[in-house]
Structure formats: C-alpha cells, structure tokens
Image 1 (cartoon, rainbow, N blue to C red):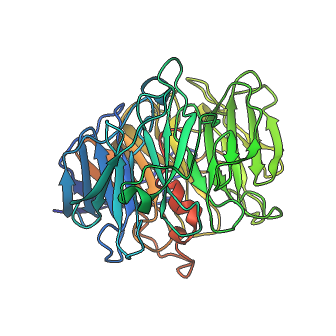
Image 2 (cartoon, rainbow, N blue to C red):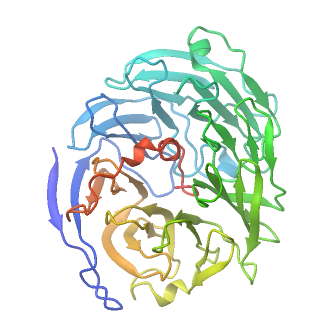
Length: 451
C-alpha cells in the first residue's frame, strides 16, 4: 500500500522560510535498515514498463519495489555486502552490492550480484527468478570476489562484468580486479578478458567505470585509470590513499569527462584527472583533508563545474569550494550556517541534486553519524534551503519520476520515503539524466563515500 502525504518543509533560519517544498510518498518494506549495516538502494526499471523501480538490499535480502509502493518480488539470498571496506572488504559502507542492466540485448533487465562464495548470480529483473550463476576462483591474495560492476569494455553494450577484491590481510584495498565477458560466463567459460593485481583503488569503496573519452567503451576508475583493455592510462601519485572519486564534465574546454579524486594523507590534495592525465592538483591552504566531495554547477556559470569538499573534522567542519581551474572559490564554517538544533558533527552521504529544474545544482545530505534529518543546501554558502525531519539511515538521490529533476530516497527503518518537488518544472523538455551513461553507472556503484 502506498501512503501519500503532502508536506511543506522549510526552516526559519537565516530568513530561509519557504524556500523549497517537498512531497512525500512512503513505501513499506519487508526488512528494516540499520544505520551502520551493509546494503542500500539502486534505481532501475526492473519490469520494463517505462517507470523506474527501486532495488533494496540488506543482509540476506534483495527486494524490488515499484514507486507506487507495490512489492514486485523479493528473495532471501546470501548477497555479498559489507560495512567498512578497509576492515571487512567491499562493497563498503552502504554499498548496494547489486547491479541491473540488459546484459544480453533482449531488451529486458537482469539483476546481478555476488554471493559469499564468489559466485556471480543473475536474476530476472521482472520476477527475481534465477537465470544462471557461475562460481569464480578469487585471486590468490584475496578471500573472495567482493564487488561487481556491469561495464562495456568491448563496445557491445552492457555485456561485460568487472569484479574486484581486496587483500585478505592488513588494511584492505581493492587491488585485485578482473574483466569478464558475460556471455562467456553464462556459457561456463571462466577465462577473463584481463586481470590485474595492482589496481590503485579507493580506500573505502569499489571501483567505478565510465566512458571518459566518448569512444563508447568504459574505463576503470581509481588512482589508476585503466583502458577498456586493462592497460594503465593514468597513474596518480597518491601520498596516502583516495577517500572519494567522482565523475563529471567539470571542464567544458577539455574533451570527454573528468575524474575528481580526493586524497587523504600528509598533502590532502584534490585532483582533476582526464583521459590523458592529471589536469591539475591543489590543496586547501591549511591542508585540510577534503574527505567528501560534491561536483556540479553551483553558480550561474554554465561552462565549468565547481568542486565542494566537506573537510574531515569530527565537529565544526569547514567546507571549501574550488572552481574548475583549481582555485579556491568559497569557504565557510558549517556551524555558522546549520540550524541551531542540527548536530555539530555536520553532514554526510552528500550528493549533488537537480531539485528545482533550474540550470544549477544544489546538494543533498543527511545528518552525520546517526539516522536523522535530511537537508537540501546551497554548496557555495552552506545555506539550508530545505530541512526534512527524518530517521534517515540511507540517502539516495536519483531521477525516479522521469521529469529529469531528481528525487530524494530515504531509508527510514522499515520504509522508503520518496521526496519530490511538487512545483512545476520550469524546464520540462530537458533530456533524462539516465540518458547520460556516466550518470547511470554512478547510480549503480555508489556507497557512503561516493554517492
């Protein structure tokens, strides 16, 4: 059953009352989310009816729900999920552990996941029924395969699969990766397209893929950027480790897409990297650790994007913003702009959001380190423009209603809450965000550190 409630949410703080409004719909779940556990949410059209659905994962569970509240199917399965990747392996905190796509060209969606025995399992998208599975031997230095990503390495569409694993001893990093043809796996052929044991991974999250150069094939993204054939294109000299990695068209004067990388270490640098190498790197003047980023058009400038960084502090964070050329653009203290009753620990699980339908982005986040409120805020000033009183343990931003603006999907214990903008879309003719391949990829490979 779907429960609809119209709410008008704003806060009277720094004269912000009435800036934004939201409409909520609620979906009851069969399971209940906890703040620190594995599992999460992705959006896809599982039954090919033209509307986006939500796949929910938790320990031992995969369920598909329509946005009208209907449970489409669910399975109790031994899906590979984890918490902190550096301790427990991938896919990392709030990583969904599941992929969805048309992997055989029949126009229908399949759902893929890894189980705890390194077995790739494929389900029908519309019913959740088993289609096929295959067990793969993990690399010798790993316990098991832990993370999977649908990819296009051969120019044939979503017909390939990237697998990733961490070292089984010590501080765990996803150095082991392998690429496979899905049709070969379905035929029982286990020979990879290529494998590597030296991938420069993010410390807390799995590999991401995107077509950086526009040739119709995906590169593999980390501190090393790999070609579709598995060769090193770019190797960034990281002093410490990567905390966060985001893909966007940051610079319009460079061809293709760029990768924003945030370093944790002595230097605490921010890198902008293209298909051909590092475009620039910079750091905050006080060497503040950037930790989390949001990348988007936050001003009226439509040529280049800005890069917002939260900073690491456990309390009284100091967000700072660089422009597309690596110059400091804005900076403020979070506690100067948050509501008086908001936690001094700040915000987390932060995403850019197309909420208003206007040309520029805002940002969306939840209260840090607890299942609590959600906000939409202006990254340049930090101004809270919408506050939603919640018990949010997961926060996912995606266009699931189809008007190219994005919705906020909140996991609140045993419910999903979907918040949408009830105002008239001022630019209804824009192409769907899902038509951008890198958007589709990013919404499948997100976790706590890389929304």
